[in-house]
Image (cartoon, rainbow, N blue to C red; front, side, top):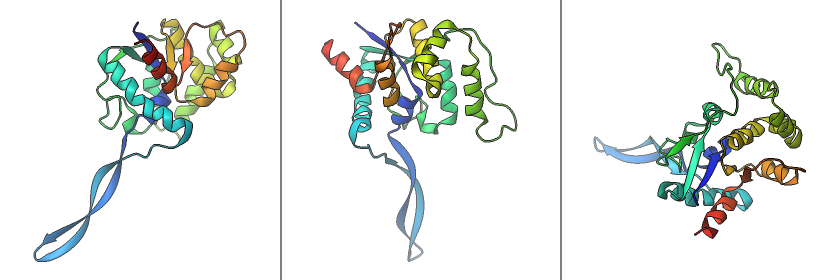
Length: 208
């Protein structure tokens, strides 16, 4: 069975494996030695604990997607959120674990139009406009998700709704608070599961 999972924005951010840095290099020129700064990259440190285990599992998930055992989906709103993230968070960026992984497009869960970026936006306008959009959605399933997850997770509620209405199996996320909130929700009425990278990797291994 091929698992189909929508990838949350935070997963792409945690899939950045290298970051820009400046390294000093010693060179000899004209009989003299100079130390010059050179722009390069370095591997990012993996944090310890729960998050570190999730980031480590992303390599297995990327390999599973390349081999066809897993189909990953990218939603339009996730792509929009990545506009405010570091460049390396884009799945096609060479410093991202998913840079050569194929993605399917997940359809929007409802019809809508909204302003994403406007000329002369003040700082913080991008996030504010996104929250205004999700808080204004009139939809019974979304209202349930908003109540179940709380006011701080309305954007995540939209991603869950996207995965559910696309008929996907899971939302892949590194947001531990979101995972715990979904687990604690009573009368969960959706088929889609909210999984961490370790949980998804374990599910794929058990299906071998």
